[in-house]
Length: 285
Image (cartoon, rainbow, N blue to C red; front, side, top):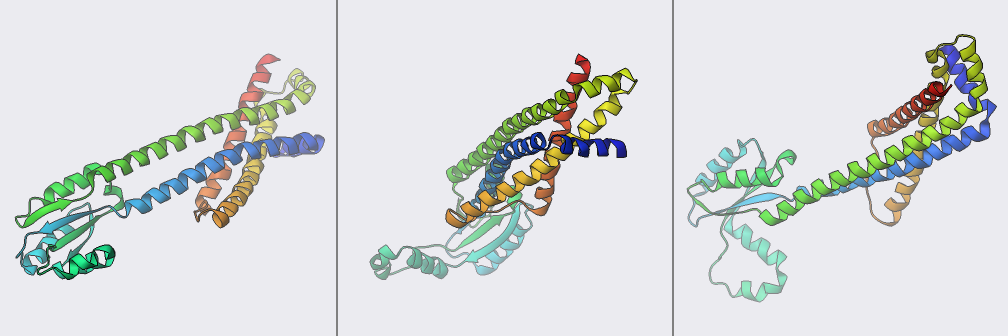
C-alpha cells in the first residue's frame, strides 16, 4: 500500500500539467453536481418552510363551552400526527380579521354582533404535513360533536405535495446525469495517464506483476484526484453560493456532514472511474 501511495504521488510529479488539468476538469464536473445538489437542498428547505404553514382549523359551534374545547384540545394533542393545538376565541378571531383585512374596517365597525366562530388551530408534525395525513386528521376532527366545520386548504396541500415530488425527482435525475458525466470525465483523464505509462505497465506485466499490483497506484491516483477535485468544487460552490446569498436571496450551504459527504463522493467517483479505465487497459494488453 505504501508503494502504491508513493507511485500515485510520483505520477503527479511526472506530469504536473496533466495532473492539474485532470483535477481542474474533475472539479468543474463536480462543481456542476454541487450546484444542482445545493439548489435541490434550498428548494427542499423553502418547501419545508411553506409546509410549516399547513394547519387544520376546526370551527366550533356557537355556545360550545370553553371546558369542552379544552378537553378536545387534550384529545387532539394525543393524535400521533399533531404537534400543537391552540384555541382562538370569537373575540380573537374578530381582532385578527380587523388586523388582516383593513380594507373592510367600515364593515367591521357596523357589526352589531360578532359573526366569527371560535376555533381550534391544529398544526402537524413535519413528517405528517402531506395530503393523506392532513385529510385523515381532518376526518377525525369532524367526529367531534361540537364541530361546525373543518378547513385545511385541500387543493393547496395537494399542490405542495406535487412540488415536493417534482423537486425531489428533478434533483435526483439531474444529479445522476452530471454524476455520470463526472465519471466519464474522470475516467478519461485517468485513461490519459494510463496511456502515458502504457509501456511501463507492459514491462510490469512482463516481469510478472499481478493486475492488483498494477492497478493499486492508479486507483489511489484516481481517488486522490477525485478528492482534490471535490475539495476544489466545494470551494467553487461556496463562492457561487456567497454571491447568490448576498445579491439574490438568503439560502443555506452544505452542513459539515454534507461537506464531508461531497468530498467523499468525489473520492469514490475518482476511484470508480480509475478502476474502469485501468481494467479496460489491462484487458487490452
